[in-house]
Length: 250
Image 1 (cartoon, rainbow, N blue to C red):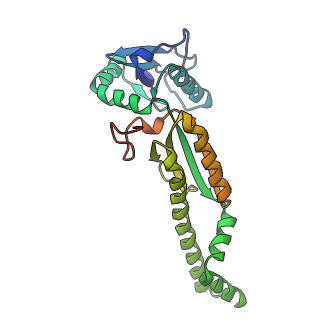
Image 2 (image 1 turned 90 degrees about the vertical axis):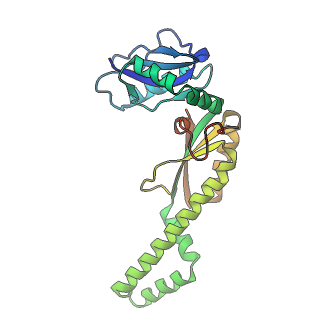
Image 3 (image 1 turned 180 degrees about the horizontal axis):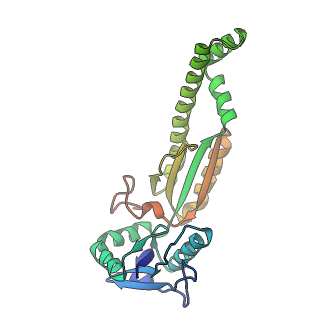
């Protein structure tokens, strides 16, 4: 039977509550696979597992339990290995990497920050800040809306100005919050978000990070800023450009 992997931790921190269960219907019993100084928190993998709310919460609950006594490297929902031997084989093969990551992420959590524009507010700012756009819009208005070509020109100029403002505001989000984080990880681009960044934050500094995010929101009312966390540090299990191996959190 294939093996579902919740996370990786130090062998010395791998004690779990008796009777802990994880994903599946019925929920599968959670167990620990040990290899050298490391341990993997696993269960049998259910067939046809789907990312339903109940299953996602079960995955998170196991990680919360596993992280009670020490750092755990969280695996994303749906991480499945062919069998237990495959899991312990990976632990042995990548032992130094996992030990380095456990050290780097100890005492830290992830906050994901997404930012988008309040459309009406940013359009007002763009027009207010550009005499050229205001003049063209006024000329079109006086001409009964302007020609088709003039309307297209105005629309393209406004779109370009908004796009430039998105880049500026995305940089402002990172400039404000990066100094309060040990590392950052830029998420995939998606429609509707001008910034999608995960920040690795010391637990002891979390209050200051959240306060800075709130101040960012207040200082820029044309921005919608959403903060999700604290989360297990999913985005930092593998070191990225801002968190090189041996350097994250140091």
